[in-house]
Image 1 (cartoon, helix red, strand yellow):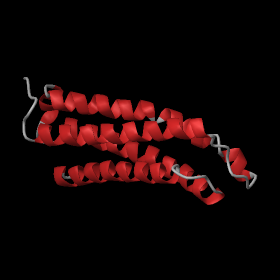
Image 2: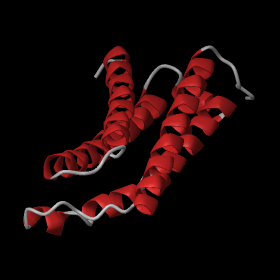
Image 3: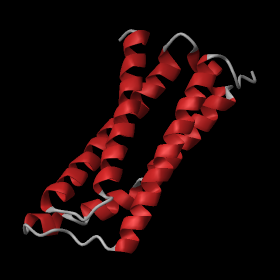
Image 4: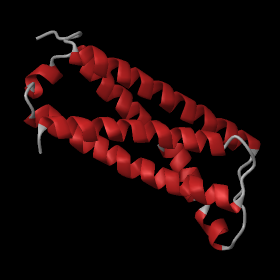
Length: 151
């Protein structure tokens, strides 16, 4: 696969993750319905899949494209970007566990329980994840222009 195509897939995955989180944030703002709960559950599955694509394609780019791993692993912006991605991944565990807990209620055609405190926590986590994704975008722009290189 060409470096340009890898870059496209990598950027597309990043934008998809951002969009999926925005959908989840939007839906969790109001009371759940059967349809909205199912949509959140589907979006979270898409989120996981796209995150894996982003990670795999990202590391393929690091190890097999023109700049090479030495450039990336000696760049502070890249390191911050990877740490932010890990933070997003870790933060996503709580909402995913909550959303997966809705499956039994949905199978029984019931609206899942989503109390105000859990809603606030999930929405706060989604906001932090989105903020970290913006930090990652900034790091990507800096990294592409050679900022942060210390090797």
